[in-house]
Image 1 (cartoon, helix red, strand yellow):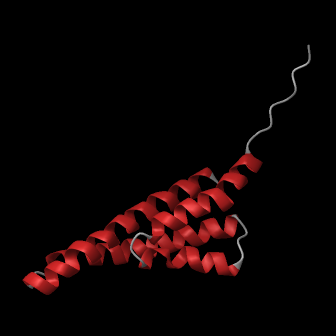
Image 2 (cartoon, one colour):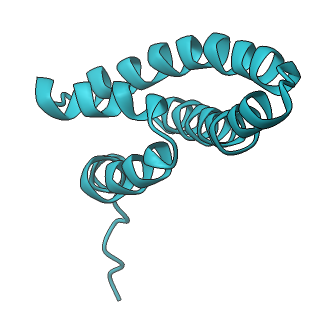
Length: 112
């Protein structure tokens, strides 16, 4: 479970940063300066890595036995700037931390 969570979180942050770069730097440069380098290069990388994010997020949702509605929200988070950070934090509180706490080994009571 820890590996699935780590893969999801890394991809959430990467895709979140990339879409912010595209939307807040690339698109204004494309409109005002007719410079498409950021949109073309970073946008392509974001698109490819978003597909990897989809796979990792779906695998995590399956392991956590999430219902369809939150799963769809999780999968679409990489399409809206800043949303991946919000959804990642919500996922951590709502699903990941409880699942990891449940999975943690219980310490045996110490007898004196």
